[in-house]
Image (cartoon, rainbow, N blue to C red):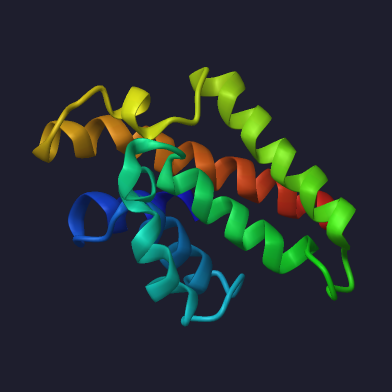
Length: 132
């Protein structure tokens, strides 16, 4: 999933959040309708706050562990959400897009942020493997 997401991000015009969701769609982890929802999460939700790749991982986690799901409930979903954030922080210290992207732009920003797309996918895959 990680390689697909990074490819979508670097080479196909998808944002960080869209790339994670697009790769998740390819893996059968969510419905294709989530792609349009992910569009608004890039650029730290257009405010520079939470990294879009983290937000996308949270969306996929919610699908699998959220309310009315056979694998989870509200408490389970929150526990999994906290896991994503903590694992991402272990790797990158923060989840803030503005801090992570270092005010870079263009290809320089893409190259910098591709690591965060990869990290979010790895953490999500780790989380979903625990589900079974």
